[in-house]
Image (cartoon, rainbow, N blue to C red):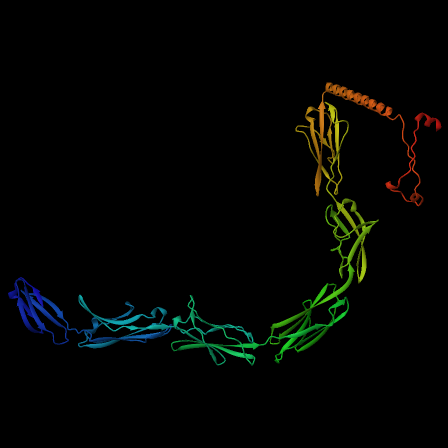
Length: 592
């Protein structure tokens, strides 16, 4: 124990401990004592009535520290860690730490009273195992804090492995398996940890199948096998999937049914029948194994008979007007009707013709250029003919506007005939309009003028006009006429009439010229002169033609041919023996 003092010679040390050695220096005085018991001892440094004291305490570092815990942990369960520190003193300065992966997860510090000897103490810590504990190192540490100094003793490390009991396996497999086919069995195990240590075993009855577990990205363990269903005895089979993880295990069992699909013979008493006649269908199972099969017979997808037997007969009536009836026999397993086999026969049905409004309406509107169509229902397919007043329309004829009228259509097949009256109406786009001018296309300023447009179409056309710019006109109520009450120069130009209906349009143009009074006289003179010239030329041509007709002519007289007597007209090659004579026109006149 060292004391700083200005007068080392006059400084003294007092203690109950045995003094071993005393030393003094210029400004200090020191004494060495023997600590040979566990009593706390107060020592003093005395100088000139000044007293300084301190306490001397004995300690002992742990001779050993141990950790005790299980190394295999099930996730979610409670586990204990026991840390034991041996021969340590004083206890009130001891702290025990428990670490996992180097991180402190728990600690224990001790308090008085002061114990006068070495002690062995244990600390118990309980925790819930989790996946984060897997492959972690656990250890205990004893720390003795002695003033500014601390001393640490560590235990050995224990590495643990955490695992989770997997959920019950889930088996995915067809419940009904056809014998002789390859099928799949899939076994899924979820929440097993660590998943790579999960083991799977799949069995059919007592036969174990080789399966290699595969860990998915989600941590699920999956095993799949593809056995061949080949059994001499059919019926229920048990499939078992076992999952194991270390000493934990779980299993699931399902039943499957190995079956043989049904086969059958199916026939009809006839394949062609008339409407209203009866037909008999016969169906029977041909499987050799005594499976519990049933049979049903349907006509056009409507089930009419069902029996849990190996043979069934059903008589039905062809009562519908349809080209054919599809008759089906279905054989099925009674315990699972979804497993079935079907055989079909087609029954052709003959029936007389019949007109319907959908196939041949009483009123048939057409647009010119369309194709005529009037059909009748019947089997065999009827032949349809439509006629009126010697006119006939047949299927797929191109419609023209003159075909409008009332027709009688007759449909015939070998089962009978039927007739129907139809009204054919043909619509068409407007024809090219005809423009009529009230006076003349050339008029004088101030005169009136009407231009009337007329067209034909069905439905009746509507009219519109294209007139010169700035021309002021009025229109008739139906707009088929343009009325110019007082002509002006702005009325000169092209007037176009457009006739339009829902099927198209047509148009016609007419030029109108508006002139002053002086221009009218000039135009009339030119027209009169032109007429005079044309008359003179015509007169000259006529006179010349008359003079050219005077003279001699050869007349031929045809002798009667034998064929004429029989009422036949001879050919040119048969015309012979003609008599030629010259006649003076004047003499001919006198003779006559």
